[in-house]
Length: 443
Image (cartoon, rainbow, N blue to C red; front, side, top):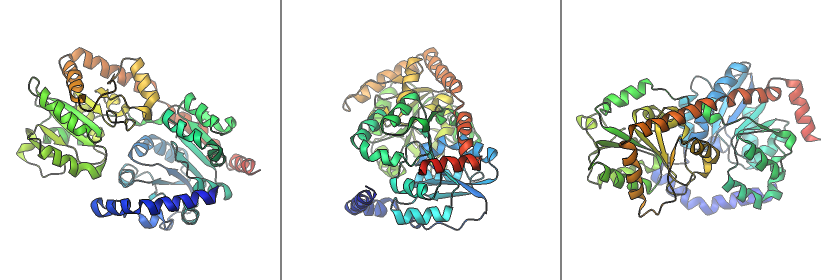
């Protein structure tokens, strides 16, 4: 099976090479960290045992913050190495974990030779994988070297589960390489059990994202507020983590709203490589607009639309907004994190397509703590958004109630980090128990 997987991985890379080359030439993607992705990592600077925590991208990196802080406090005799796959995740991890993690690296391509090189360099005592990053060759190599691996904050959405079931007979052997799976919910636990993981290895902790989203205004919040004059009485609609064509829909919505409401719009595209594309859309729209990365100027104070073309600053803006629309949800991208604006005490609106955060959205809906739109025809989506935004902007009481209930849910569901640390301690903190667990897995 592993040979077939490696061949398919190589074939896929060959087939997709024109796309990767295009992205390299257009956006400079995939070049940074290439040697690390091939397993060539810098030498270790410490003789300590290593905890290797793997995140995928921005969302997982942000969710990992409280866990990494606790790992540092609870296990001071270990070094912490954090890996990511995407460039944006790498940049954020370097920023967030600058004074916590000992190293931030790129995760290796999942060929056996590159995985072996990386594992040999890092030499982890234990590997923690956030959410559902199941790389077959990496997991197999960890098991062969008797390195325990735990899935942390594990999640399997309904849509992913349907796909995984099609290859369950193959996935079972991959899951056997896990020593422990700490899942977000009972539903996630049931799904990974049905895919073949022994129930004895499965625990449930809750969602780390609730702990990671204790958002409070920061110094950066104040700087953004002063630079763009966000304290001058106009309501700010923040469009967060948007995908194409959501920016055009939101812009059309804004053009209608401004006829009767005193509003401004801030757009934060999900992917940095789309910043230029969105800038072109704004430039052709006829609205006055500025971008965060541009030079400070008098127009910042009055521009109708602000393009937040940075990574990592979005949490600083949530508390400044009257409404936050969380993107990737009008188009079918599965939605993005609604907990950060909820934790900031801001009214949250999202689209219908939120399967990546199914349990969280369901919890907020049941408490009447979020506005979720029905499925929308893209041609008429702006009309629906205009209606919902206008209703909320003219009903301060309703908007405040939604925001307060959402913030209360975030607070009431915190504690997953404590539970996760307690579940990991036998694997990390007790060498005898860890040896027994690994030996049992290999028998």
